[in-house]
Amino acid sequence: MDVAAASHIDAAARPAMVSEQALSADTLRRRGSVLTGEALADWPWLGPTGRGLLVSGLPGSLLLLDGMRLAPAATGLVDLAMIPLAVIGGARLSAGGAGAAQGAGSLSGFVDMQLAAIGGGSQILAATGGQAGRSIAAIDLRLGSERGWLGGGFTQGGGVPSPAGLAASGQQRWHLAGRFEQDVGAVRLRGRGLFASRRESGTRSDWHDVAIGLSGGTRWQWQLAAARGGQDDATQSSRLGQARAVIGGATGLILPGAAEPISVAAGAEWRQLRLAESKVPARELFAEAAVPLLQDRPAAENLVATLGVRQAWLGGLAGHGGRAETLWQAGGRWEPFPGIALRGQVARGIDDFGDVSGISRSVGLIATPAFVPGFAITVDRRWQSQGLARVQALDLSASWRLRTGDGAQLALAVLATHHDLSEHTLVPVPRFASLLRATLETGQWAVSAGWRHRTAQAGGVDVSLERQLSGRIRIVASVSNAVNSGRDGGPVGRQALLQLVAGF
Image (cartoon, rainbow, N blue to C red; front, side):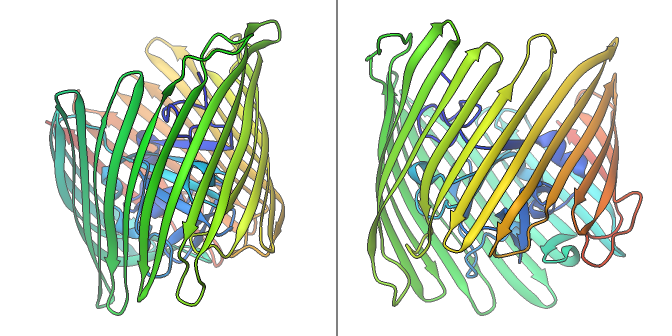
C-alpha cells in the first residue's frame, strides 16, 4: 500500500502525498562535488542561505539523516559544508508542511539524506581538481562488512552556498564516520556516528552527530531512537538532543470496498535544542492512519486516505514563553487506472519556537504508463503560506530509461520548478529553475551531460565521463559549468574533478 513517504507508516513507501524528488548516489557522484551542500544546491526547489539551504526560500526547512534531525549551527541552519559527501548514499527532498510526521520545524519541507548502505564492503575514494582558481580534493577510506562500516577522510575546498550562488572556499575538513546494524535475538540494533572538523581563514568549527536505535516486531512494529549532535565555533555553539518512540502496524480492520486493512502509527518525541545560551525544549505526541477506501474496483484501483495529528508543547526561546500547538495533515491518493494516480494534501506546520505557523496545500499527478516502459512523471502544484511569506509553485519531475542497443541504455531526467508567486521569502527565489541530465551507459562506459538553470543567475552545462575498470574500480571525470565560467550573481566558475572509486 502506497502511503506518504513522510509518514511513520511504511516509511519506505513511495511516492509521497506531497511534491517529492530524489537524487541517487550515482547522480551525486557524477555532479563532481566534494561538499554535500554544493551537490544538493542543484535541486530546483532549494535556495542557499549562509551555509544552509531552504525550500523555496521559506523558513522551516528540516534537514534529516536517515530520518533523524541534524543539529543546526547557532544560526539555526544545518551547516551542510560540514557533512562529507563521500558517506552520503542518496537524498530525498519533500516540499510541503510535514508537521504531523516530523514535528515542529518542518514548515516548508525537509531533506532526508541517507548514509552509505551497509553490505557494500570496503571502499576508497580519491578526488582532485580545481574550482574558480582554487584546488579541490577529497580522500575517504571506508572499511566495511555485512554488519557495518567505519571510515574517515579529508576534504579541501568546495563550493559553499551564498546569496550570489556558489562561492569557492579554501576550507579544509577532516571527518570520521561509521554505522552498524546487528540483530540481537528478535531485536535489531542500529547506530551511526559522524564527526567533522573544519578550518578556514584561521577559524575552526567542530561538528558531531551520534544516533542509536532499536526496532522489532512483526505485525506491530516498534522503534526506539535517540540522537545527539552539535557544532562548536570560535564564539558560538549549538546542541540538539532527541528521542523518539513509535509503534505501528495493520489493524486488521478492512472497510467495505477495500482489500487491505487500515494501518496506524503512534508515538512520542522529545527534543531539546540549544542555540548559543538559549534552550528550546519540545515534547510531542502524534498519531497517523492510512485508510484504504476503495481497491480493485472499476475506476478505483486504489483509493487511500491519510490522516495525521501531532500535539506539540514548545518551550520557545528566552522571552518567548511556552505554548501548545496542534499540527495536522490530511491527504489522499486515487489511482483510477494502473499507472495513473492523483494525490493531494493539506497540512499545518509551525517553526521550532512556536512563533510562525503555516498551511501547505498540494495536488499532483503521477504517471507511469505501461505503454512507455521505464518512463515516470510527476507534476505537482503547491501553495505554501507562513506568516507574511507566500509561495505558489509548479514542480515537475520526469525520468525515462530506455534501451538503445545491446548492453546500452539511455537515462533522461528532468527536475524543474516554476515559482509564479514568491512574497516575503527569507532569500530571493528564482522564478524558474531546472536541472536536466542525460546519461548514456554502454558496457564499461557512462557519459553524462546536464544543464542547470536559474532565472537571473548564470546557468551551466555539466559533463562527466565514467569508466568501469573492473567490477570494483571506476574512474569519474567531471566538469561543471563547462560552457561558461559563471558571473556575478551566478554559480561558482568552471570546476573540474577527477575521482577514483575502488572497492575491496
